[in-house]
Image (cartoon, rainbow, N blue to C red; front, side, top):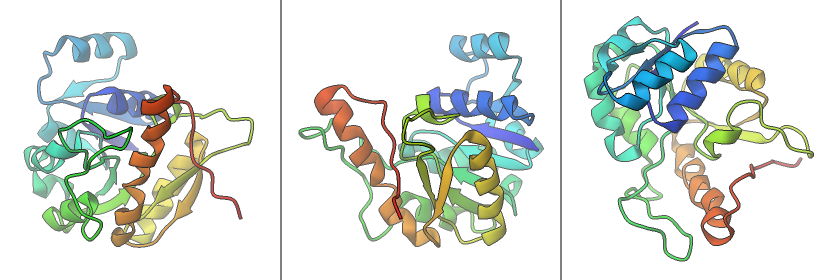
Length: 213
């Protein structure tokens, strides 16, 4: 597939390299194509870099990997019409601009309305699927744990889109747990808070979640 990454930070770069390794045509979207780290990424990987609008317009599938505070703005810059009927993998978390309390991060959303729901409302014709928000970027592609493949929790309103994302996650080395419709993001997004606590308290960042059945 032609995959466009909206957001050029560590998560976007990690996923772009993963998708390229799996044989997809990837473009890394950024606000500023002249940023030194983006220019270097292009030199190191050969992955094309473009602005958000060009990235979204030319992609068949979109990956949103910006900070949560600017996610809506990034989608507007990408062009709402350019997202029409396309799958959007939403990796974002609604992290507030303040430090954690005893390792516990703050969100700018409530448990009654998630960031993903806000974004789906902004772009109703896009097919959003939540994924990759509950693990660090170093384990997003081909995670290696002695206990076996970790679980990636996803949700979204479009069953076909979730099937496509599940296939991508399987290729990336994950077991997928479908939690249902977009409202489930109210539970999935806070997994980011839980995942980060061992990191902040004990500098332990190399774990992932596993759903036992």
